[in-house]
Length: 138
Image 1 (cartoon, helix red, strand yellow):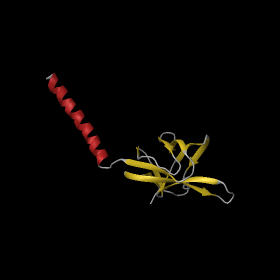
Image 2 (cartoon, rainbow, N blue to C red):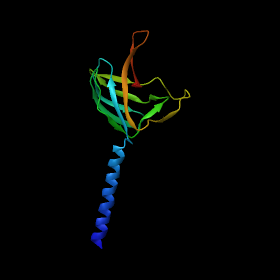
Image 3 (cartoon, rainbow, N blue to C red):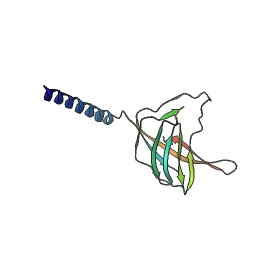
Image 4 (cartoon, helix red, strand yellow):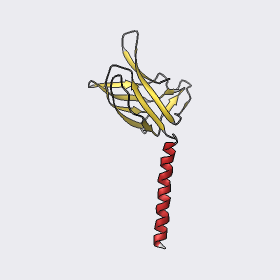
């Protein structure tokens, strides 16, 4: 009896692991890669949505992109990636974000499962200050 219960438990555990793998194979996961359209190497990057939802990205070379990274949480607002990409570049703090903010009537929701690319791109202001932004690639 003891062996039968142990065998049944093992089969249930194996079925659970198999269903997780099948779910990932179906594309039920949010996968995001980051494309660096700047001339800066970005080191130790982290995508930060809030104090509970942060995902390590790693290094993103200038003109390069990361592999697809799995996210359990990826907030978007009006089809724009929300949150802040933080890291360092040449020893200095680096930050990139979108221009969509809370309190502006924007509807926030989770990114749909699938494979997505987020571009990091520079924008020069009228005073010659360079800001870095995030957007989904077309």
